[in-house]
View 1 (cartoon, rainbow, N blue to C red):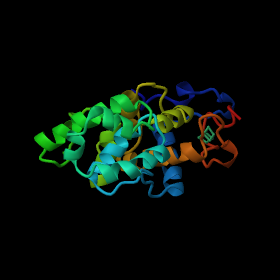
View 2: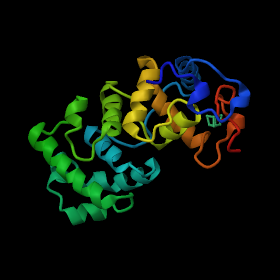
View 3: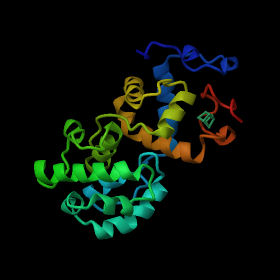
Length: 232
Ligand code: SF4
């Protein structure tokens, strides 16, 4: 349980700031600042329908959205339906997505997932977390993105590499496992922030709180971030 843990004991390298307050209060301040800066964060993946979003998110693990968009521009002209992916030849699909990382395994999982969507769900993505998790290649992160982007259903918090890094720097979670990080963040943030916070963290991670050199000077969180200027 993290809700009664004080920031001071969570990720406190920057103790000189003397920050000491309840983590939930800290999380609320972070969420409000992020909401002001990124009022309506949306995925940067390009898609025209539910199938395209699902495939794009499955391809995006360990790969930038920009690279995925380059690949899917041609892919979605060739594969128009779930059935097109379900009957695809594995070597051909592997070749068609070879620009993304781990393309061999991703191609195999996309074909298997497409067969399940076609045969078990009548050619439509299911709308619950439990059912989406039945699809190979779909873990909680992908399922959360699909539910939130397509149908405004919020069941959890999307945790990717940016969310993981920023949560750690802000002292919100020191876990390494995405499921555990999601659980901790869900216990810290009021549910009304769940959808927006991950999208905001992703954009903040890309443009300000970068992996190698966070730009703390221009960061709106610098006065409440325990890691501010530690890596500059
Ligand atoms: S102050 Fe620096 S380390 Fe903290 S969130 Fe902002 S950019 Fe990241």
